[in-house]
Length: 301
Image (tube, helix red, strand yellow):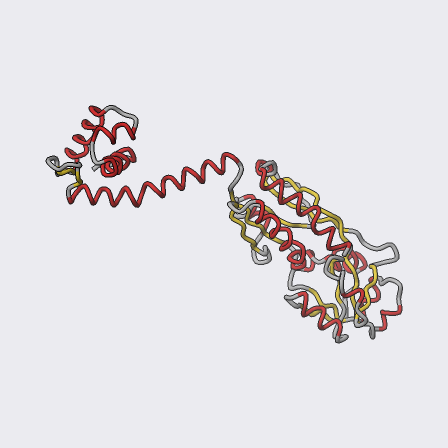
């Protein structure tokens, strides 16, 4: 059988209306055209779909099977049409995010909480981006936004500036470096440096300070969670370099000291990498606006 959506709508309309005339009015076609459509469908099926002598017109056993199919398929088609309409209107879509920094979760969750309230029909997901190439995934349309501090020249990809931040040295108040006004690369030679478990090239302390100075810390310890890093630092088990939005609270805690990197400090910039054709989507523009403003509130807190 060759069953079309119109056939399913016809069966449903006749069942609900109880007769051809009322069903034809509901479907906005003539009764003759509706009768011809039903006859063609019955010829395909090889069975009668209606009990002709009943009033109101009733479906046969075969017709009831077709009605069950209509009840299953038509709502799904209607939902798909609604989804497509939402995409066209810019009200729905997909926002899968890859993050190239552990610490970004600190500000990203408040951003997405605000975004969710405004765009409930957008499918949001987060992929940390640590175990796969985030930017190649963006090109393959596996993700839709990548948070990165390292912009690249990639065809079809736009790096949109979000906000500036400062990597900050964090140590126990008992650490000898606590007496310094700022720290330099040489200060790390005698220290255990606690970092996130990512490649050195993606850590500010290495890319901005230690690698250019060709300095190695005494030891390197990798820890997944920010809270555990801070716990170890407070216990004087090592030192860390974290973004300023992470240390906004500990800098007032007596167990810690925070110091700038070098006398002048280090400033970095975070970017949102998106496919160029997606940058102007209404929901994308909104999440980018939130990502430019909400983290600044954390930095100032």
